Length: 53
Image 1 (tube, rainbow, N blue to C red):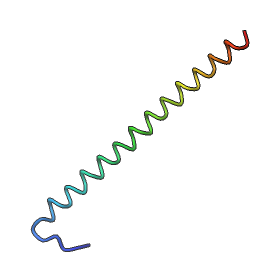
Image 2: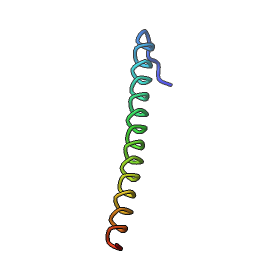
Image 3: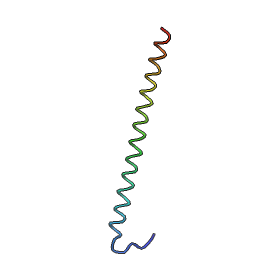
């Protein structure tokens, strides 16, 4: 680990905040993707149902 001197707390805090923000963005992306897949599946089922009858 590099020597950060008197700014170690600030630098490590900035890294921590950045990691938390990136993790949050990944989580939001996965959640939105899951919702979009579920909506698409529902639309496809409705379309298939309408095409049959």
